[in-house]
Length: 503
Ligand SMILES: Cc1cc2nc3c(=O)[nH]c(=O)nc-3n(C[C@H](O)[C@H](O)[C@H](O)COP(=O)(O)OP(=O)(O)OC[C@H]3O[C@@H](n4cnc5c(N)ncnc54)[C@H](O)[C@@H]3O)c2cc1C
Picture 1: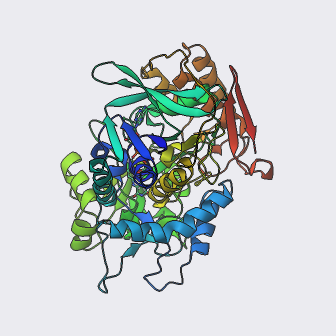
Picture 2: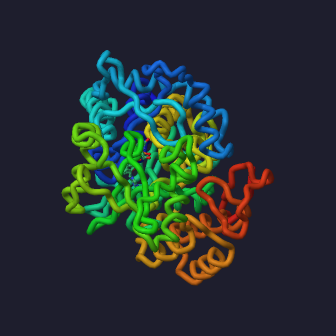
Picture 3: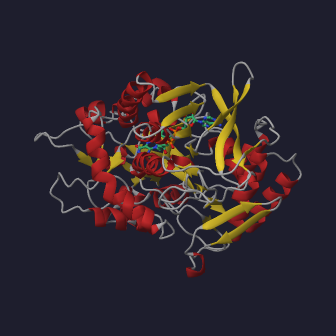
């Protein structure tokens, strides 16, 4: 029987392990338990054109919204398959025990999310991620008991193992507690290690996802794409340990954004975008907050005080919890001070619509991969992308069979990010960028000791320098317009030098 190695056990990795285990043995490797993966944090929901609201929604409209939100640099074929499979995925999640919130007719309830003209986001209260992960863990455990999946928790990915024909045939990991180094070999590898959070220090995401796996892959010859596309979530709050997110569902339920202008509440989104207002795509909302607050000089508020108390306590219970526990603020009575924060990495490992990378036998799925979201991800599309990606990668990975002989390469243990890197990245890769700041940042990185993470950081900055236009999450003050020349993904390869090209 074939063996598939899955690295990462959030939604993408769990789904890949479950689907692959029908036809292959699976080693599922992760730094921590799935219960502690970032996937659990997802509050708002997962998109599928279920059309339970009778709004004439369709997979075609879901496709169009996703491509439009991504400013047309998403992989169109991949998005077509993603949106067509969305219904099947939500039905499957429901079947395996995800308790989606239902409407009075017993149908899966749907809410509005940014960038979508229809109610298309299925949710489970404000704990969608937790509900889905719990259902997936249940499925995975069954396979563990049957001996089809073997879990390895507490192992950190170090590098890929290749054959002499340059096929991927396993991974080297280090045990977090004992320091033991071990090779896991198999017929194919699926990487599902999430976003590149630690490049930016304290983001709203999981600190487990330090980006090292993606960084090491780049130095081992794996092509990356769209690294400059970093989504700032419009509504995050500062808590003592990290930034936390106030779900977009708060705006979906009717929350409004304002700043005080001459002592009056100014609802700038309504004024600037009368049709969708607060429900414009995230990049537009983040930029608007930045502008309305004069670059952060004025406090910006998210106001949900006009919603009825039940909606806040039931549908937005997590928002209520965050505000009362960490901000000492009751959102039923007071507006919430917010500001945009780093949230999601649209870019990452380049794959085709089958989730294949440029290395035979190597697949990528979930937030670490790059094909679905283009220049801007729509809320609710990443859980969908993670599950779809895991599913498709597994279907293809089980068919792999390397033909070459294994080769052993020297292994270097990961170096940690010391905080200076995060400071440079936050400064140069913020919502608005320009050539001067980006070049200064690149020069600073050039002066630092080289490691996979530093190389990845440079690759992000060089992608931002080379994209001489503004598009989606990438806003250049020196090139404020988008240009048809750049209606393509940016790509990065590494062969001792970083190469950036568009295709
Ligand atoms: C607060 C918050 C709210 C969100 N809400 C939504 C939402 O409502 N809807 C939506 O669509 N999206 C949402 N997202 C985004 C979404 O949660 C993620 O994009 C998605 O869960 C990613 O799943 P994943 O499986 O790719 O990665 P993750 O769930 O991040 O899992 C990554 C896995 O990789 C492992 N790992 C990482 N590095 C290594 C390594 N070096 N070696 C070994 N293992 C490693 C981790 O231990 C973990 O098991 C939200 C994100 C945040 C932060």
